[in-house]
Image 1: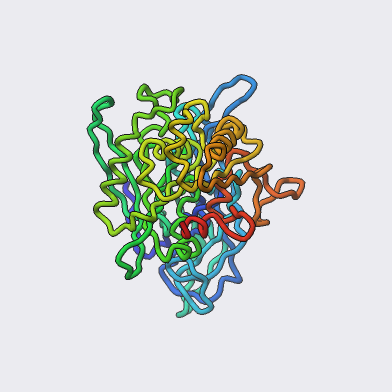
Image 2: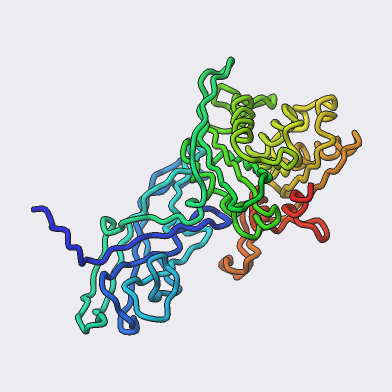
Length: 418
């Protein structure tokens, strides 16, 4: 027997937000279908179920686990349909969910140890309202249990600021290459605008650019704070189907060569041609794999870029000759790296290349390092109440929080002035 749909049955939506560690469902908006003005006599409970991969270091085995957990809820309140708190009556109740770097039950991503990629993974939420409440006409709204089928939409406010497209390129060596990408158009009246190009890390490859936007909080590039430095900037975020360091055989390059170099340059040039870009203000950056490709593009096409910010970049110093470094010594470059990066050696990549560029008389080279990568918001703690410590590879966190500074100038202020 098929259960009939009741239009008056409450439903809910989820709201995604970008955090330092990735995306989080930080709000749940319940539509009661009837206005109320008081929630003091009821309570809510949220339970989650999610599949995830667990790695066992001793056996080196990866297992798919099914996790169940009650999700913490710091606060709930009457709101508008977008989750903004209201003082008066409303038919919407917003539950703020507990997000944390270690909480997989509010993180919509699932990391695959086999592919090294993040993908969206469904989380099944069950929402319980324990006690009845009364609407404005005195009618009782009974306690209820909402199930996954009652989730009508997942809102991604930051990602919705971007548009999405794809670019096809026929490479003479690697054949047909298709790159997906996200792009942001500034809402200002100037005739031309600068362009920020951001290249993702290995875990954000694929064909869904939202993985790139939320994987490392790249959405911060279109925040009012960062956009204000540039008085409005275009943002282009390409996505590789595999990884930027793909040698052409699905393996990490051992020479510095990438199958995506020509395709990516062609995409960037087409985007510039189709938009009112100030070609004297094109800024290139990226983290890890994307930092590698930042250096690779600079070396292959230095005249295209105004300045660059490679983050924990993986382009080995041994891959490039002094003759080739001479080509980029006039480009201002700001390297950002963790001193104790366990994934990409600072000494063998950014440090060595920066020193060699300076020796060659480079115009302007900056290097900012961090001893450890920790939470600076004060919101996320370890069990012994210390600031939460991230993987020391994750120096991009400080970039997207606009916390990379040299004396009195920030990274983005510096870029905008170039």
